[in-house]
Image (cartoon, rainbow, N blue to C red; front, side):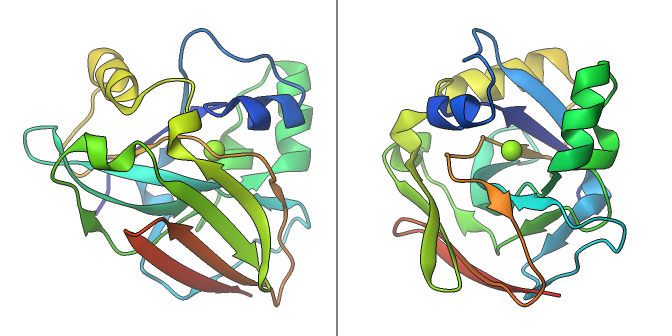
Length: 195
Ligand code: MG
């Protein structure tokens, strides 16, 4: 059972711009409950109360027993964008927009011998065969080491926690019936059907 999902917002400049946000000078971290994760499932169940769930494909790192990184996976940081915009405008917390049920689908994990091997990889999300999100991990504003240090220094990270490292541009709404294919170059591919 994953306890916490530490996630960084706006870690790719093009995505920050597409949502009208400034490019940050310090990591902007938010929390998704660990119980939002579904591991290696083939289906995504959209919540019944909204039509505005956006996909955000991300590289996720897993903290091991020594709070080092030895595994990673693909994650979808599903986001209810309409609520997020309303809550943001009021200065309220985003929990409903980011931490609803099944809001963090994960691929299986793959081993990471050295963080260096994750630093220049294409990260792609296709929907119904069409590329919707594409970026390269070299475009991250904050490096993997910086993000890891930052969350370990400020938060009660425990073994098994995940760190979501941000999404490239191209986010948009999911529809029931969509077929999603995510890939982190040469490491992992995973697909989901949206119900
Ligand atoms: Mg995200």
